Image (cartoon, rainbow, N blue to C red):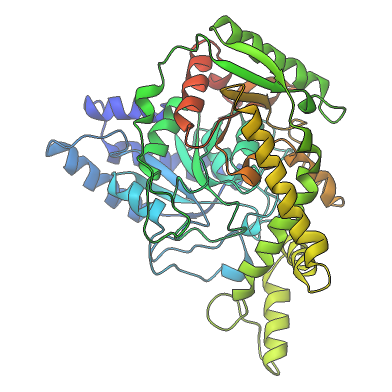
Length: 483
């Protein structure tokens, strides 16, 4: 049963081949057996899962149906879950039990999804390797000596290892798409505002977006259907009708215009990945797509702009974690200043502290115009480049990452080297565009992803292209040895 996709689980439950309770017990046992190798979960919610599974079976017995009714999933541990630890991968929130459900959690629960647990992540979603978690690094199931990507690496590793069919993630600069690429999954970052951020603990508020991680585009469509929609509790949520994503999967790609930016194929890209991307282009051409070279001239400025804007917003968002109201509090503070300093110094890990300091510096009175304001202007230029490109093409295609997964610890002494792994993904966050990564092959036995970007609210188009590609390739069906 652990090899079933979300779509296959929905059909199996509808045909009464197994119950949600049976499936949930199988997967919980599998997690208990295999997750010690991966460290992909922070918290397991066995009692909640079995209660939800029994309720889903009862709803089906009463005639209800739905693709997510009785389907097991897990949540990245920054989605608030009522009465359950929501840690954000940090010592700062190790003792925090959320008093309410995030909108995404509530929507999926209402659809009948079964929550197996909360997945490991880079601390406060800051990282590209899932090594900064207070609970230890997550291992890549394709090779346990390698990183799974971050910050949604726990969700990605758990789905790739067949511990469950799908999971939620968040993407601030590629944190769904990059781990999807490094673990052979399909991962989708929706348009900014498409999925509610209410109850999703913030890293950088103008960049964060929740989305699905699964093995297929079909499964991502099912999970996104349950997650998307307007939320009056979220001031950045957009009141836009949610289409039936599954209904658009089987559209023809005949005449689809795909743009390939020349800037993507620079010296920083592993030539073996470049070859796999070109193979993907040929596959889509066979399906009727028309390929055109385009230019995104301001892409070269994306990394510096992102690493000013994101830390600036993080320094502001994380100021609330001060040892006073909730979260970690140091022992026996001498005074208020000592309470702040030691609670934050002991509660936050080195990567979070680094980004808070960078952000505070960029926002300081003497440097705001020189750094933060200039970065926002570059952000606008990057968005304009995309708008120009989408006048000529329907989809933009390229690599998700410049390299395959790297060894655990290999980039710990050089944070900038890890930051450069986000070079292809962060532009979608800066512009607020939807992006998807799908499996495209292997380099040295490690998975590689191809990235698709589309105009605002065209998630259905991304899912359609990915699904058609997956009907004609088998990369997404490959399973890591031992899982």
